[in-house]
Image (cartoon, rainbow, N blue to C red; front, side, top):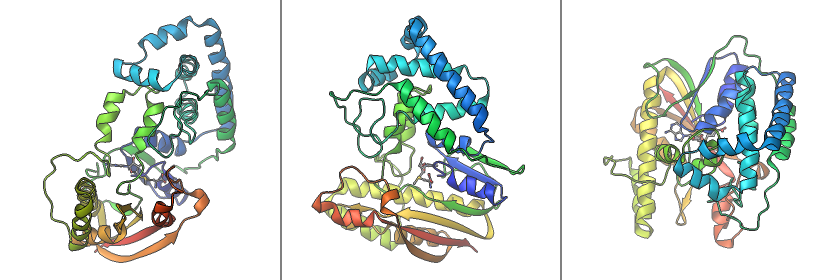
Length: 363
Ligand SMILES: C[S@@+](CC[C@H](N)C(=O)[O-])C[C@H]1O[C@@H](n2cnc3c(N)ncnc32)[C@H](O)[C@@H]1O
């Protein structure tokens, strides 16, 4: 659940071997680029070459039209046609083709992320969506998307400015694709886990990431299937019944009274997190810690107390709970769902400004 790979980068900076797992293809791409040795000057040269190549492709036009006609499968094409104007599609195809021609893998991966960042933005970037960072995407008929090549050029400059060369000193940094419920590690080999799992009822990453991943060769059908495997996803299947500790059971019961389907989502989240804690316990060495950072969730006005529920679930599996502490978040750094601002949400809003750190020890 490494997200953009912050914990892996910090591990490397501490001369530790850092391994991160995530199920999200965009998170993985971010993690890989952040832990790769990159050089700003050669990335800059590759980036500016991509821009002039994309201009040349656009001027000719034919290669773009041909590529657009066979770039996507049927469902992905329908998605692209809905969310991107024809002019933007041509610009993005030109950029994508020019990036595909970059032979140097670290440079190409860096440029793919720059490409992604002109689409997955708060404002919906060059797509026709109103907002991708927060809410369910909404199509805005009147939106005139900016020129993709200009946006790429702006982002490139900004991203080049933020590259700090990561000196790995030969230390291994490995962002891996994987499910936190079945980690590809032997028993008792991990010295420390630092992670921040998804929250119940939280932001749906895939909803937004799909917008750029579709351009980077993924099919929306595959991505939708993958989405069901995200912890905290709202798709409730016929999972086996697991009896949870009394605190989570109590919150689920309370929520069932006002909203049975939300209660089922919450149960599924706790059961999935239980599988994660079980796996964490298995891979950790004895006398080693797991630090788990969780946000707060308010569902139908009920404060879920995720931190206490998760601590109890971990304790039942054998962990010693060393402590659960509150951390106040910087308002300006926290991404808020767009709906905030209504009076009725004030309690939720207040709770969104804090998170909890759960300290666990495998005896
Ligand atoms: C709250 S975010 C982590 C944010 C991270 N701390 C950061 O700095 O970017 C939770 C992450 O868990 C990932 N995730 C969800 N379900 C997962 C699963 N079954 N296995 C592994 N990772 C999963 C999501 O893709 C997301 O990147």
